Length: 279
Image (cartoon, rainbow, N blue to C red; front, top):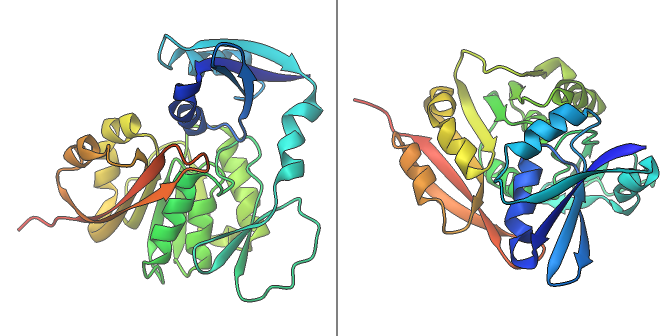
């Protein structure tokens, strides 16, 4: 049996609660319609009940949630429906368990299994980061993936020529999962991952984290961007990022872009920032 979490929300709250759960490392969310305009979100935060409880109790206290033990096959059923998909102009994300041959040589294939982490690449915030990264020259750059999950952003940066990439994530599964994905893409010699922030600065920092966490970690994240470096912030709702920009007051925004959510109810914004150098 697998440990899952059921969260009851009003239909109009599905998007932001789902995003909140995504940010805490879930790899899939099932939406189950219920009476009285209620939707039940079923997901997993791992098999450690105490860790899952701590995570859920850190969320807004008006959320109605409970544990549920279900058959393992139900939890993993999302994999049966996942197919390769294109992102941006140059890459195709391929589930590592996908067995069908693909002879398309025009796009670079990136093989990912999120395991017990976040980051298959299909979520709008991850997709937006990849598209923003594609516009940058990453050759010989050093990259930091803040909240790396499966390591997809750092791994793709290496495939695009980055010299090295390091991931930071408090999810204990991220180290193993991201390293496995790096090996699957033949970049393991340039990838590393830890639960603590490295002391050095990087040419590019990508932070795909929800706004409250970005604000809380603004100083930590900002200090990891090298002079003349770039910072990509994601996980923000379109048009609702002024408070995040304010927290990163020593940066200037070069551009913003939004990625439509698949529900077409909301869009997610990605900021591309440049370090504002002191005289």
